[in-house]
Length: 232
Image (cartoon, rainbow, N blue to C red; front, side, top):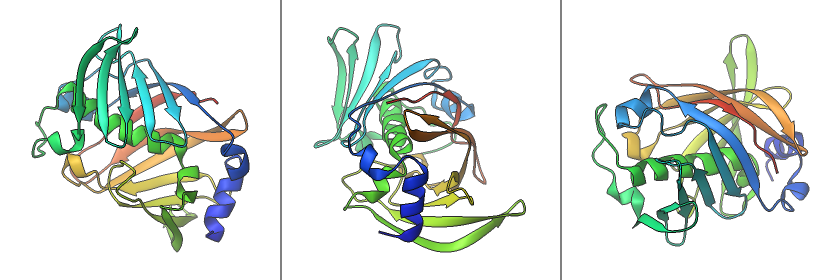
């Protein structure tokens, strides 16, 4: 295992303990101009998110209505929208292939919104432990200087079997091995270069999670997490 990755895993609670976690539950709200441009300005206010940390499965509730939820699974990739008591509302396999050509005013349907957010947040909430999977490649690359600090960096390559923003991403860590930034280029959003900053790490049940701050690109903002309280 890469030496930097090993230190990051230890600082976030340890890989051995992570293997015993069976579920994550988080409370969060998402905001920012990206969602308004897609036609869904308040869709992710006051959400309860439940994650399987070892297989890409994640639910958001309520989603689009007080009595509905979204469910994301893989093998095959599929988004379902159901009522909270399990009644079918909508469903799509291969949701990634359904996105329109991206522009600043491109509107998404509910399935596309659910896919984008589900794939992103499963990875956000399982980082850095997902980097230790045998099908993920993670290696240290040159350091980065920003605001008088030096951050070490991990270049991470994700396999096609993990739904994510894009294949190759870079993660930045401070001298306490806490994540400060991640760079990615979301395919379904037209591949803008995003520098996504995180801050205020907190411990929940022995594991460290972070708040997300601004996500900046040359052209536009992608998303902003206003608050989150993940727990095991």
